[in-house]
Image 1 (cartoon, helix red, strand yellow):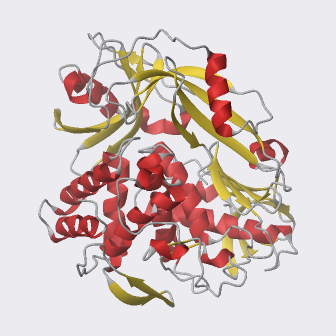
Image 2 (image 1 turned 45 degrees about the horizontal axis):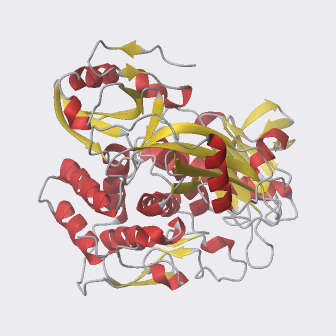
Length: 520
């Protein structure tokens, strides 16, 4: 369904619209926010022919309303033009946005769409097997003045049989590649999941009869788990089959039973749902009470998991070094990509992409702490369970000491944004660890964590629960799609101020932790 547009008669036309995924955008706060913008267009760098589309609403206990908007210009999406308004008592209290100008480009393209495809194809390496699509956009990310550009989408299968889905932004006048990113952000009956990683756990399924059950969780928005039969994630949704069972016992604690990995994924997603609902007050990825689909056994020997097209996909690993990527923190990581899409929607490239990945690592670790499962106790290692011979100390990423993977820096430098987003995430991961636990050596979840600072300081942590509340408020209320590391520092300080007070111990701890990773 779509919401009925509400068009105000303004010099700048502001339109209220939405999608089924963002069901709370029909909240009265959206109309109030649009009304406030009638006399405050400069606060969001509005231009004539801008349109604003409400995407999310958060209302604080004191009545403060935070409304997130996307922007179009003469009907074209403005990438990097999104913003959040903050209002209370009929007064606009502030805004968060990345766009810093009201100038807009001419919408006359000098190069053809075919030329844009050629430029993007050259950057991709011509390894595509499907027809790309193009559309014109206004590109405002990291630009002093917005540019008319082509958004070129490539989706297909690689030589390894696994899929890819990448976006390229090509200047519509010069043909220069401006940016690129990947879209793959690399209940009721009481059943028993005989999982691979966390032993036997309770899972919620639906019951068709006394001898017929499906892996659907009615208590959590009917989130469901599917058998992908080792097809790539780009085609899994069309060919997968919902897991079904006669006795409501799923798996046998080994990979010999295809339902074992499904039990892990189903349990991990349910735990993530409960964490967001019970700890952060968010009901589902889009905060609309609707669950998401999960697909296990995706790809052939795929050492990856992804959030793609509003669903989660889990590979089986290579069976030598890596097992199935269905442990708790991976489930929390992928579902949190969905929450990020629904909130700040940090673009998956440059510094914003690193922050996007860090957000998923942070929330994945928090889900592991929330689960409080003795078979996989909380720690700051990401994906440690998937290592077949890792002994619980080898991981994909180490939040307390990111450089331990040899690729993820501990400290910020001006070249950080040129790294793969899975590595540029290291600085934010390190920040979160220091904010939570402080520097020095600790044993957490049975694993020794030693963390140092980039400026030689010694820190005490404020605890991971407090740190997570600050981080979530920063991403859900203050960050926008192009927030960089400097912006993340500002956003988390604003979040700490609103939660605990400007100049509070928590506020000061945020500032100190950012400085400790060289974000000043």
